[in-house]
Image 1 (cartoon, rainbow, N blue to C red):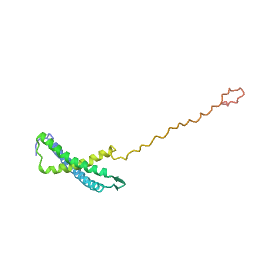
Image 2 (cartoon, rainbow, N blue to C red):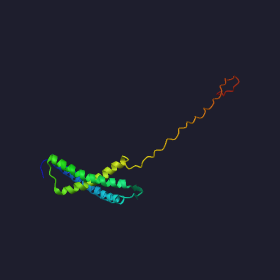
Image 3 (cartoon, one colour):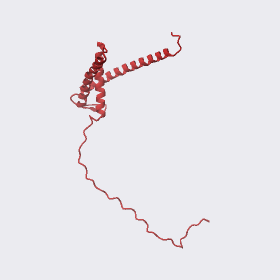
Image 4 (spheres, rainbow, N blue to C red):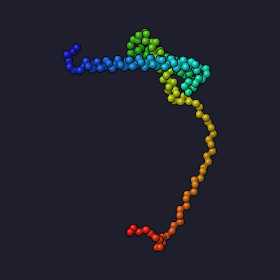
Amino acid sequence: MSNRNDGSSEFAIGAGVMAASAIILFVVFYVLALIVAIIFTVIAACAWHKPIRLAGNVITPAEARFFVHAGMAGACVAPAFVWFICALFAVPVREDMWLHFFFGGYAFGSIVLTAMADKTGMFAPPVENRPAEPHIEIAPPPAPRPEPFRFARWEDDEERPS
């Protein structure tokens, strides 16, 4: 224990706890993404040749193929990116980490790219091109006729305050 009272040890402990929490959170999200990607890949394999209905949603073969192809693209791009960055900055990578880069790239590519494609409307049903209906103008109803103007007469009974 240090005899200094400058608070650096408390800061170091706080930073260590925050870093450990961030690493644990990253690992949890990594594992959840892998599990979701595996489940969706099995579903995509079932929908590879014919559409299937799952929880009220229809998964078409085009969507299933895009999911798997996006995952394969991510599995190729993520390790290539890591290799490029490590070669650029001369940082060594442990050999056992490459498998994580492939699986993480597959999960990231399949989930994120499919979500982006769905959000942009890539899998939306095509819009029907129907001819425009003829525009028919309907005349507005006639304005109500105002009551003709009458001059007041002296014999009019007016209510006067008493």
